[in-house]
Image (cartoon, rainbow, N blue to C red; front, top):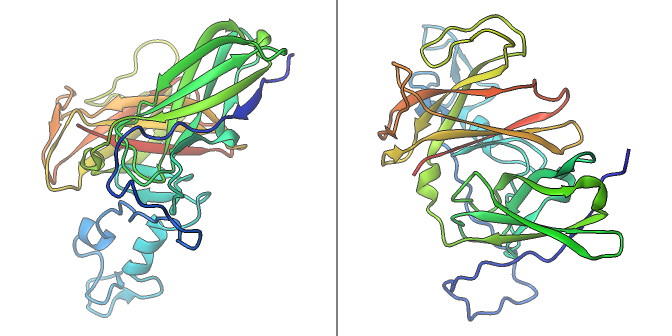
Length: 311
């Protein structure tokens, strides 16, 4: 089996947009910009009556039936903050690889997340991250496929299925080329940011309910029914609007990382109503369910990243 092509990360393409203060030059002593994280409402606000006035968890019906070992403010902090390798729970995103402090240099591919096929037509998947200071309407990833002499044999560009990418946010991409994988010796990656985005389209939360492994018990729900033949992996959960305005076309995008951190698959699902029909809009404060279907189980020891978005 031929080894996977080498990955060469070229300089990222910065956003071609005039930004406020573009004429200012940062000094060497200036700290890196640190945009505020798009934090979800406090757990205490999301689940009324779960915590008392001091932020302690209620454990019974009496006023002194509380557990103050972890207060709600500490829980909120733990869910949203941490290193880039640690999971976060934010508006429109759940998972790791979110960079809490960006350097302003723009979007780039995360080389450790890239998975390249070694047989058949060339395929690749991975994560790109917005390391600029502005929300980007889209991220486009370009792969230059080169042979062993450095000659270009194909150029492939694809947009991430996740839009309105916030500063520090990773998003998935999947691309392919008719060029045989065996002909590709190495790959150069470029990432371009689109027009300025609107982060209000990501003011959603994701609550997972349950998963079913491949071949598990049959499911017969209002939004999904197993047919004859094999039974795929299912991820069932709920999407809620946490912003002040409703959103159109809400959907869930799921990426699966292997134990080594490489992105192995991407799947998506629209949000559906009680009759199983697509919900074209969710009003502020409302929620609806989604079922994400995948042909295989998540990789053992890996991680699932979830994005939710509307328009």
